[in-house]
Every structure is written in structure tokens, then in C-alpha cells.
Length: 184
Image (cartoon, rainbow, N blue to C red):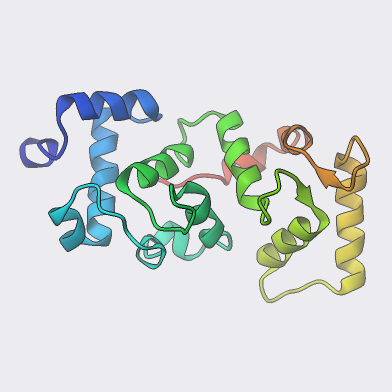
């Protein structure tokens, strides 16, 4: 490990390990992936802030329809740019070791496009549009789908999903959280 281990002090690695779902070795691997996104910037400052466009070069994000929301949710400034610690948090949440409850919490934030702590009809419309790509639904089909989702999931009939309602729905769908991952 020699050279790569010296990037962080033992105390820093201990802190990162305590705050993530990663071992020290995995943390160093995540830093290597961060470094590879912009070697010059990270060589100059191991905690460099990388732009969202740079972060989106990560192969797993490049093809994700929610890539911009993922970056914004994990960005400490909210603009999609990430420090190493932001990147580490993102990779930790998307790791296999992260508990379903943590994955659900971040999935909710990603799907809450207007950041109002509810998933509304407009948020659901955006989710469906992003998932369907070029195969957009007709307005009638879209409205029917949204109505069905809300009818099944909106337990308090306020025309929006709270986190508790969202969590309840995805608890019935194990495949949902299985797809919420990035491999190291």
C-alpha cells in the first residue's frame, strides 16, 4: 500500500471508516477513483472540489438518468460539484454495505426534484420521464400512472408522498434498492 496509504493519516482513515460503510482499503480505492477523475487537481489538493461535469465522467453515473440529481444531493454546496468527502459519501451510500434505510433516504432526496421534502405529482412525472427516456408516455397514460402510484402509496391523501410513505412503498419492492448501487 505504501504510496497510496500516505495520502491520508491513520486518524483520517479511522474517521472516514467510522463515517462510511467502507474499510480503510475501500476508502483508499474510492480515493484512487476520485483521483483518476482529475489527477492534476487531486494531486495538488487531495480534497479538491471537482465539477459536476468531471464527476459525471464516472462510468456508472454517465449512463444514469438521475446523474445530475445524484451529484446535487451529495454536493456539500448543492451545485453538483463534489469534494472527496462528498464523493466518499456518495460511493458509500451506493455500496452494497449501505443499509436499505440509508439508500431509501437518499433515493427519496434524489426523486424530490423541487426539494420540498415530498414527492409530488410533478416529481413523479420527472422520475417517469427520466426512466422512460425516449419512450415518453402520452399525457393520459402519464396521468393514469401518477394517479395509480398516489392511490396505492399516498396514505394521507395529500397528493404527495412523504418519506414514510415512500419508504413503505419501496420496502415492498426489493429490486428497487438492489439497483441503487455503484460497484467499487
